[in-house]
Length: 211
Image (cartoon, rainbow, N blue to C red; front, top):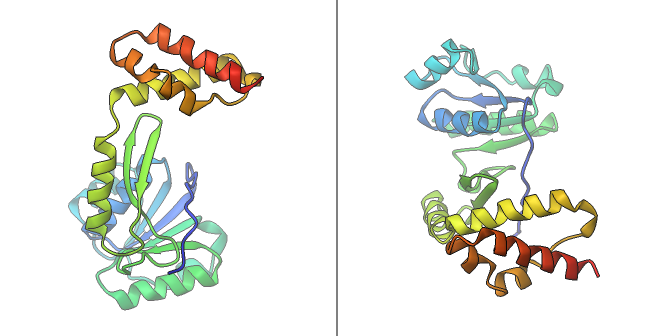
């Protein structure tokens, strides 16, 4: 098994092409809009949700079947491509065209996601949790994502806020010793509402890590 390199892309304001107009396309479009991507849908027909999004100006809609020229004629136009049609053959054509143009592409019909796999995602505040099973099954990835997300409580998110606050106040102090902070009882203090004391513990760990 060849392992893949996990990465989070900044697609804010970047032009992304979603080929297909069905429920899968709508789900992929929602995910791209969450990260403020500039989305174009390429499909002769589309779901009601995509039609509403296009009417509201949240996405562009090119009402046509896939043509490789949409990608190959202007490769610099697209930052990321997603193939979501119900025809694996068409999706393969999308992958070939995008790959040839040097554009990362996800194939929603391929078990492994094609060149760029999209993991199951959970977001909460600054936290982004992703799970991939290497193409075993998307349902399995979602199940494991939910298990992992269920173990993260409000105290963990509050701890992240404290880390952000402390590091912003002392950017030259280096990285806090996170393990030492957790072992010091910081999370228990947050659970008890003693946030100021938790912050002091974190600051002490940050100071000790910069010595």
